[in-house]
Image (cartoon, rainbow, N blue to C red; front, side):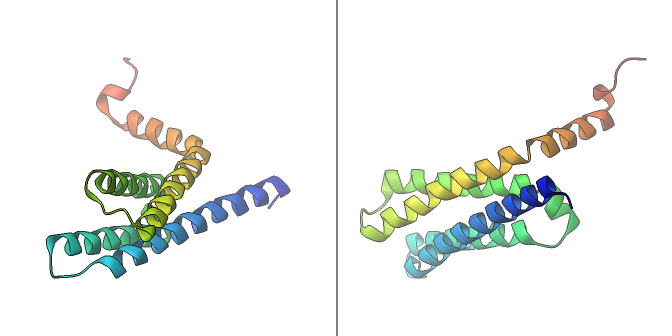
Amino acid sequence: MSGTAYRDHRIKVGLTVSIVALALTTAVIHYTIGGFGSLTGLMFYGNAAAYAFLAGALVAPIAIAQKYAFLTRLALAGVAAATIVGWVLFGARYDVAYLSKAIEVALIAVAFAATYRDRHAILALVQSARRRLPFGRAAA
């Protein structure tokens, strides 16, 4: 592996580890807040499950999960954004909530940074899919 390729691999691994750590941290926060006594408690459990599942999917040693990791990162960013919007509209204002929102903002930023780094692979996937569609081919 050349120096540049090794550096790029280390950056990719670092971004992935950061995303997983942030997602699991906010999953733990939501899990500890959740409970089965109310709809709100179930919502926290569901949020924790979504973060944990998507973090696991990001590092799963499955070829299709690796190929479409950008979708998993975007899903994590979407869950984080929806959580922030829900908190702004309905959430309680206390210290753990602010910490959780800071983690989620960082998660969104790192997920988009990692997705931006993979933009060439994403474009290649889109072009490959487009060539397979009947309307994606040039007229003969």
